[in-house]
Length: 293
Ligand code: ATR
Image 1 (tube, rainbow, N blue to C red):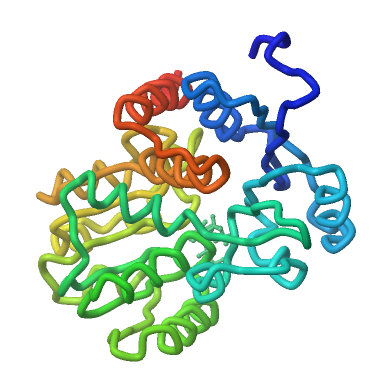
Image 2: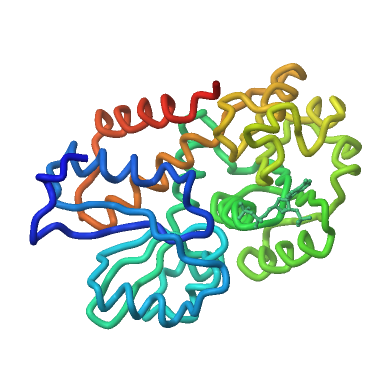
């Protein structure tokens, strides 16, 4: 970014997480600043896992940092120290976007929007569908909430650790009692006897450089699917996606989720709508930055 763009009026935004070295969020927001002529800069802040979160947020607020994205492992930890929280972020139990207000920070969740747009871009609606989540961490929380919000018929939660699957199931039942849920181990996933399932892969298994790994490898699992979305975007075609496609399902990676959650945060911060053309430019940039060697 050209240093002559920064002056006494430049608004500072950023990302807090641990680690933050591989983040693509600065590319999204600094490109959007250039495309829209906003006088803002977006920086990575390495906020350690064991930090004092109350003091961290007080410090950021005192410095006038206008907004922040929040990533692993802080998406839950910030919640007790916010002065406001959106209804959706409170229900999901995770915040990925902070907005400066006079009193403190307001917390929002744009991961749900990112996931929802990525599915919509693939022509997928969850209404009346049976969905299987692989994983029960932060990304799966956003996906479970979306299933309830969008009227899915049934939610399977397949996870390595059953206790974590049960916790997510409990939260889902609180938020959306009408959504039928079932927990299972990863080894049980191939034997559901289902068809036309939508799968959302929410673990880090298969992330570059482990391109040949998938959380479930049995083709019988993939034969039950009509569509598979991976939240991973590097590599662009994961083993999970390959297995889905080889067994007759459609597949999409997580790049759109990354893109749309970022663009939504930008809109919240600046009050400016992102155009299709701007979104396409940022998408192309992310695609070039995530291309594997
Ligand atoms: P995120 O916020 O990105 O979702 P997370 O909260 O750490 O990350 O969640 C990671 C998910 O990936 C969990 O569901 C985890 O399973 P456990 O609940 O058993 O820990 C899953 N996961 C991570 N590594 C895995 C592996 N090697 N095999 C299977 N599941 C794995």
